[in-house]
Length: 252
Length: 388
Ligand SMILES: Nc1ncnc2c1ncn2[C@@H]1O[C@H](COP(=O)(O)OP(=O)(O)OP(=O)(O)O)[C@@H](O)[C@H]1O
Ligand SMILES: [Mg+2]
Image (cartoon, rainbow over all chains, first blue to last red; front, top):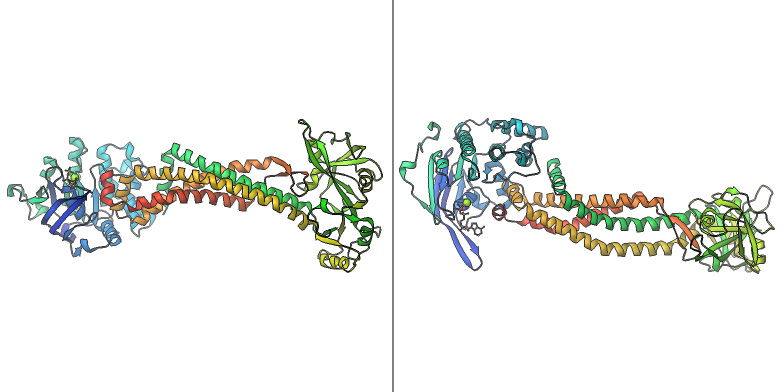
């Protein structure tokens, strides 16, 4: 966990994600609204998966379940050997801090903290010393190309720069899995392209497993595997969309 | 953790206006709180310093204050023969017969009448009260209609200044000296020859006998020696304890008044803090969701907001205390309830009062901020993130 950013070279150490018969519904007033209906699928270690589908189809809900910030009604989610649906709240929080990196549509940086402090934040949950924390955060920011913006507040950064800061925050603890909910949804084409390049690079060179929700076909293109949700059901995608599924490392 | 603490602090600073207004409300309450305590403390220390250790007062049995007491000439003479009293260089007992009379004088400026305490003193009185010092003029001559006035009295009352004359007891009295008695009750008195006062006011008896004990711890022995004589129906009290007792009722009254006022005000300030912190939580719901997603436990969120509220309260407390500390430059003159004479005293700030005031500010912050902080810690992560 305290290994510096970028030390891990391949996806071989990453766990597989196995989603088995997951159902989830939300209660709204008297009504129970089913959101996910008996969803099963497998994500291999080091894979870059895009989740697509119309608004309200349950993409974010599924992503939240994988990331361990929401709870299933039925089914199991295995990440490596851990069934995260059985973890209690504090165990789940500890698991998240070690295993998951979050990338949000609106970056979700803390406005009163500088870029460097935002990136340092997740390291507060590790036993690292203040100096080590600073070193790791600096390295992560350098990795996303923001070495010269460390002392800027989020409001002093462009959207693309904020998202890169958020990516630095997501990888600073060296988690195996990155979850991204519409990471380019708030960005212009050029910035979106840069963010996708960065994510593809993290997937390829650091072996991060990436699960990305997106509406943007250009974003989905960068993934190895595109899965679609429709009204809470997983749709079998056109096999033609599946690129280099078997060996993500060979993807150009 | 330093980063989390500075996170709380920076959020306070980020919303400067709300923070300033909320802290300002709490500062007002802390100001009243500290001022009441400082006033009670000022009164207490003034009256405590009025007595000197090693001095004892002899009063009529059961007297709670000087004006209730009567000691006749025979009793006074008997008291002075006690072996427990220290001797002066000339071999005479270090004892002074004093008479205390309340008179009404007009204030300078307004002309409003107020009670002033006259103290008829004996030859040894000054030697027994080292805290009293002549600062202008000279001591009145015994056997004459000369008087001297405490600085506070000279300043506040018509005719009490140096060289001026006062009329009381159907006589004209000339002020020949001004004395300074520091922060003691004597500064609010007028002194003259006890026998002259007694004849002017047609009194046949003294009020008290002030003695210097031969030994610092000789109080009990002195008391026993007087109790052994059945002719004497007298109480013996340590001078400092006697004056301290005088302050108790008034100090208690000030404290209770201050506490009840601040208790009422503090409810308003706490509601203010609560509204501020509720708004802070509502405005940062997305942030809370993010922190929780990153793996921060509910406990950390609770702490961050509680800390923010505590810092807010501390800020209010510090500002209120700073303002209250400025009161030390003012002197209050009020009625001493035991003697019904004017008594001048100041606001006294002690480290204890300072800590209590800061603690009070933080307490208000904590009480106001706890429920919002608890709410912040309880939000479900997905709901918080959706609110962003
Ligand atoms: N916390 C919640 N409480 C109640 N209903 C919810 C909650 N979260 C999601 N829903 C409902 O569940 C359904 C799926 O929501 P979800 O956010 O997963 O959709 P989505 O596919 O991500 O949509 P979009 O593309 O618009 O982001 C929607 O109908 C939504 O209103
Ligand atoms: Mg969504």
